[in-house]
Length: 266
Image 1 (tube, rainbow, N blue to C red):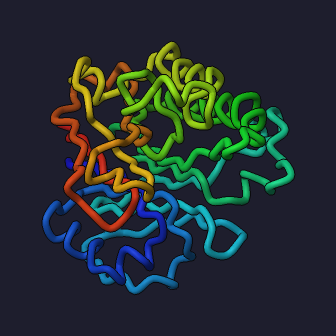
Image 2: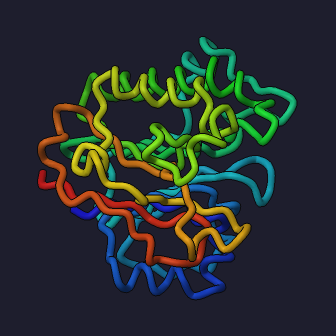
């Protein structure tokens, strides 16, 4: 099975450019996880008869949102967190809004594993949402994953809005402490690894440099490949050995992010 993840930065925009259609035609993912859809189901002109569609859209129009398109019908689909987890971590929101109402997580159960996609809240340029992310969102999301993992192995993907190590961004030194590369955000990612999840790309390519998934629109950054690796596939230890061919598809245009993929042999 070929599993892809892509922050499309607006599904309607990427469709209008023709980029979504050409991507599907060329890559034919079995499961496609999208982030930042910025739309509700039915608002985008999508004609994919081979796929089941599952959407978790933000209450706020044109904002955030995730979706899973799958050729295999899932056994179960869950939007968001269990109420107990949201209440435990007091995820009712901050001055920006309630992150549990922003369509940020979908979990789909298949025969041998769970697939989870996430669009992690951005800490913001002034780090004003960092405390919500570090103290509440990241631990809540990790607990959600561990609850699912009690039943089946988990593979999870998405825009985690953090570069984990210096190798994961082109200019680490001037970005230390800035959103996406703070100690807190990097520790949040490290906590996934310490909980037993495997960064599939970095596990396969521990020393590969200039492997990025997001580029700013400024200063011709994508052409110069001055980017960040903030889009990931992570996997439970129990299924990591069955994962092959992790890839970053930097040639796929249409968004400021590119797709990332894995193949699962179970």
